[in-house]
Amino acid sequence: MYKLDTVVWEITLQCNIHCLHCGSSADYNTRNNELSTNEAIDLIEQLADLGCKRVVLSGGEPFLRQDWATLSLRIKDLGMHVSYISNGYIINDDIVDLLKIIQPVGISFSLDGSNAETHDYIRGKKGVFERCISALKKTTNAGLYSSAVTSVHKKNINELEGILEILLENGVCAWQVQTATPQGRMPKELALNDDEYYKLAAFISENRKKYNNLIKIYDADCVGYYSSKLDGLYNTNWKGCQAGLQVLGIESDGTVKGCLSLHGEPFIEGNIREKSLSEIWNSKCGFEYNRRFSPKFLKGICKDCKWGAICRGGCTEKAVTCTGSPYESPYCLYNYEKTHDKS
Figure: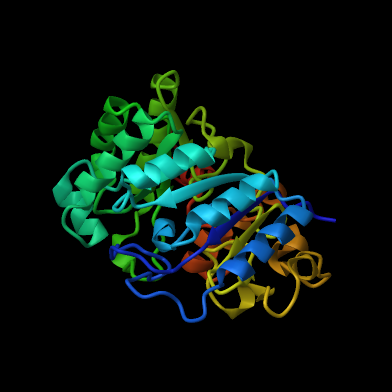
C-alpha cells in the first residue's frame, strides 16, 4: 500500500491579507464549520497512526488560529515534524517565544516583491512587506530555520534578483520559487508565458549553483521538467506528482485531498468527520488520477514524450488548471527546449 510521508494542513482559511494570486480565495472570515481543537487533535493522532513524518501547517494564515501552538506541540509529541507557511504579518515576540519551544523544522514566509510597493500590492495590504522582513529577522535571530517562498507571475518576474538580495542580507536558509497558478483570485493574464517561465527556470539554475553555500534555492514541483540545458534543477529527477501517493492535503473543515491546490469535486476524497483518515487513505478507489496512472492517459505535448512514464504529466495542479487534464502540463522545460532549440 501507499505510505504517507507529508501532510499540508490548512488549519484555518482565515487570512489577514488579500493576495491577488491566492488560489484558495482566503479572506478575513473563517470557513464555516472548521475543525474544533478536539477534532484537530484526533486528526493529528490519526496522522501519527498512518506513519506520517511531517505536517505543514498553512492557511489562510495559520497563526490566526488560536490553538496553533497546542496542535503543533501534539504533532511533535507524537514524533512528527512540524513546519509552517505564513505571511509573517502578525509574527511578534510572543509567537517567536512559542516557536522556540516548539522547534519546528521550518517556517516559510511568503515574499513576493523586492520592495514594499510590489509586495504590498500583490498582498493587498500596506505594511505587509515591512512585517514580512521583520518576521524573517525575528525568527532567524532566534535561531529558527527560516525560509521564504515566492509565487512568480508577471507582476514580480523581474524582481527575483532583488528578492534574493534581501534573503541573503537577512541570513535566510532556503528559498522556494514557484509559479503562480491562475485559479482562485489570480487572473489568467498574470500567468507567465513560455519565455518568462523558461527565464524563471534559468534564474533558479544559475543562482542555485552560485549561492549554494549561502542559501538553498528550490524549484517547486510546478517548475520543470527534464531540462538538458539547465543544471541543478530538482525537476531533472522528477518522478511525478506525489498527491495521494506520499502526500495529502487537508482543509480546515476536514476535507481530504491529494493536494490542497487541487480544486473541485473530483479531487475530494472524503472528510474525516465522515470516515477515518485511514479509510480515506487506504480506499481502493481513492486518488485515482495518480494511483491508477498509465502512460496511455497522457495528452497533448506529454502524449509521446520520452519522459512521460516517469514524469506522468508534471504537476497535477498546474496541468488541470491550465489544460483541463491531469496528464498534460504546459510548463515543461524539456518541451520548451525541444521546440525552441535552446543551445
